Figure 1 (cartoon, protein in one colour):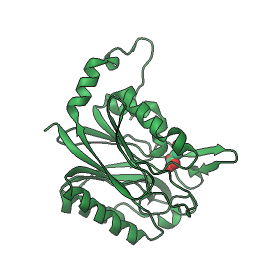
Figure 2 (cartoon, rainbow, N blue to C red):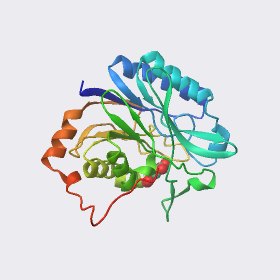
Figure 3 (tube, helix red, strand yellow):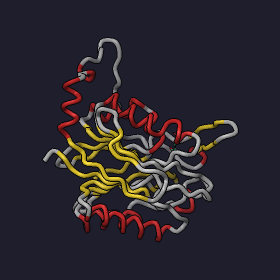
Length: 275
Ligand SMILES: O=C(O)CCC(=O)C(=O)O
């Protein structure tokens, strides 16, 4: 089989962790019922997004969220990219995405590699490094159809990470994310299309739904982009499931037609993976 259905759950995240877990589980079931084989949740799907919330909502892996996600993957026979949660490990906090296979086993654990520290005067200042530490590894997993790479939100701004995943054989990169009302309209779709085009693979981003009363207002607009760089499926800012049928043949076609990957001048430059 060279094609499969991907579902992105743009969850309306609340302050109640148990409610977030229950509603995420319900939407995973709905997505699987509608034929999805890979389902993805948003960044910080079980907690409000903000440095002051991370210590309170943080949990160990395995823990409550691990169990809920593992069961949701197994019960629905799907691959589940579990958005991200604030993780606590030996007193250190991370922004971590767990991935589960259809048998409920954890296949990958991606700790956000690039922390979101920005300062745009008069608009937004956010310093994840006030409470979080970065991860130090790449995270890919295999399905019967393709290898999938995982990044979290700000990770999408780093073209080198996307290229490393492409070089490792990934044909889909999924970024659970939560852009905001300043950088969302400016960069969210542009970055996905850029990463898709420079690596000639599928890129998906999955955001929480927008809550205008939250301290951090998410942009929404969960989206799937094709290896050609066009938007295959998207939504606005409300709670929704976004579906896209991913066709592996399209990756090969685009790579054949515009063979930039084999035209790289490795004698002049190179991206080297150290992980
Ligand atoms: O890069 C951006 O503009 C937003 C990043 C972000 O919200 C995050 O990393 O959580």
